[in-house]
Length: 274
Image (cartoon, rainbow, N blue to C red):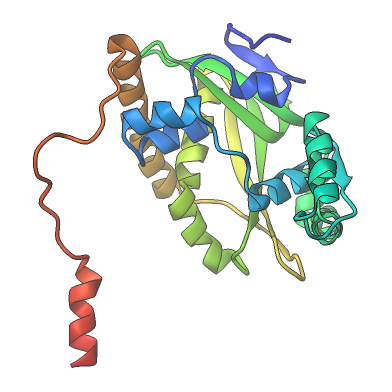
């Protein structure tokens, strides 16, 4: 399957096709706000292999949503032997996700907890997993793509979008720091914008499962002011991306001497210890 080139909703788009498609995604826009365009393009052309934490999240997504790469228990808790390395390489070559036995069991436990959670289970009913949305930004002409983990279309103009996250935080109060760190408020703003361009107003909810025992589950949403901030940030990212594409100039850090200082909290530490 080739990547869609026209605006619309598309079910069944393979993950590799989606990520290799035209334009920019939410994760790409968020990253462009964190690094220089030069680094951003380099990272896109030289992608890092997924970390074990990322693969655990992928595993939970697969088990909860029922779509994605097959998870394979390698049978080896340590991957430092030639036999284990060969097995891992074989699984990756087949396009599957290799897992250590304990991680394999943990992912199944986490996914089962999500399905057993009353609110999460209700949210994950009657919809479409991994539904891809494509729309063109009217201001820059850039193609935007968003991939809802689970989308329930209420009618032709309204939908519920559930985003499944794994976290090292123990609950909602800690998860707010992950929202700020990873820009999840920007992700929500990006998704709302893409769906709105298709004439669909969405309600956006995060379903979160802890990635350590006892793999607790909670559901959160964000206040409007957080999403409004994300919307302003995303606009800056789109304008930056459009400029780079138009000129084919992907700038690095500015030339000259950068005058920096210590963080304020470092100065405040002196007050605490004196």
